[in-house]
Length: 51
Image 1 (tube, rainbow, N blue to C red):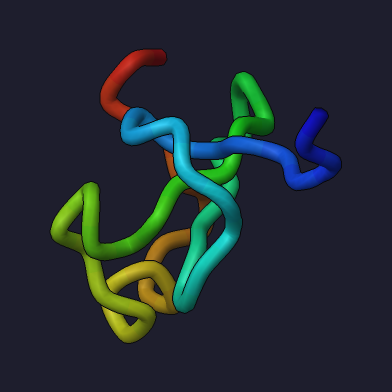
Image 2: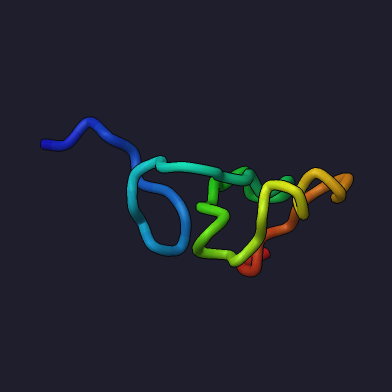
């Protein structure tokens, strides 16, 4: 059994830049959502595509 958690719409482990949805609190890879670290810093909150 694997001890690593899966995140994002891709259901893969944590890797690189990730962003947390302020509604569901799921973590997403920036690359999967095509959003950069700089873009998220300009946001006061982040809502994922699912929410």
